[in-house]
Image (cartoon, rainbow over all chains, first blue to last red; front, side, top):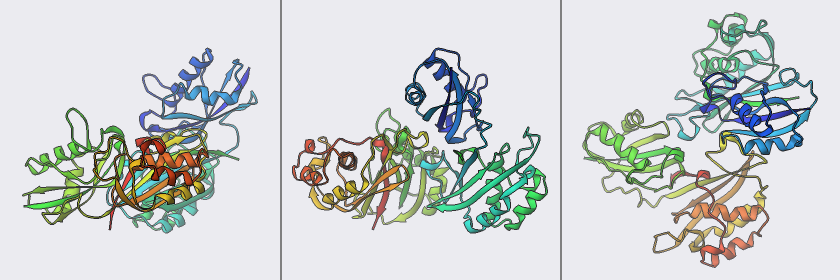
Length: 244
Length: 244
């Protein structure tokens, strides 16, 4: 028996998020189906991030155990032949049998994409959040720095978050402009429910000039969800991946 | 009566190209429907580029005549409210009544996107042509320079092309790498049927090392479609727009 780690990329547009659930099309369910079919054993993967409906990923992680003799590196090719085109296994390797994808201590990198222009872009509509507001990227970047470090992020997670502790550490956050897109990159130890989308919605308040950068620090200290900005839409969010 | 010029962006994935035809979903048909509904006159737009099935555009052009009193600049907003999300009017203005979008003498800019990696990307699958081959961008760029200038492009257009003259002028062509994508940009006086896709397929032969850069010059001089490379898929092609 061996444990295989998959690196999974997907376009979340047509899925009800990662987690398998009854009567809904999910990434996890597609993986379980393709794997069960391939190895001829009943497989249920363990995923690293339970991304929401409409959220994309370049490098989510999942593991499963199998008795199949095929080398772990070959699983990516064999699975891609069975998966829909909007899900791709972009890497597979063998890991120790006690490896757990949510207990690796690795950093997690997210990007949030905002398309700021007079009119939306048809070719970016599924992968960015459109706003006709002009955004002050410099001020957004200044505001973002209040979030770096270990903090109680109660203000920046959904009131439905189930975690006991709301303390997380952000190692790095930056806001840059690339053409018509503003890209917020956040690297952290882990993220609470809706945390990156609330950070994006909060930084947009500053970018639009409705709030000053210092307000983000105050919102964080308030430890109250109502003190921060709105939750930005799912389509702009992409889980880039895990890193050492 | 006034003539209104529309700048049209679209995701070509779900359309049978630009040109209206029976029983097929096309960009032109969607525009005609939305406009006829808006102005309450029977409208048939005249388009600048008849892009193929699956080809995208950031700035195709179309004109129509109307007696409606609304300022030309407002048409973009009014039409976007009636069009599907994968088609957006990104500009509208009044032009002289004898303005014809295919007779402006403007330059036309195309991009062809190739995604070169070990595995395809789900979020770029609709907007780039995937290859697992590594491509030598420098050699592709060197090869591309044989195409600059006024030439008979018989070797690089579909045998089904209907134009009498196969002479066109390419003002500028370059190949660059951005992350996992190789982007071929071509600016020209006009393009023959499938010309940019054949140029892309031909330059890829060089990028993969199957041919040397000089071969592109020889293929051009042969004035024979069979002398050039294959036609690259439609999804990688985007009509960026028209320019002075």
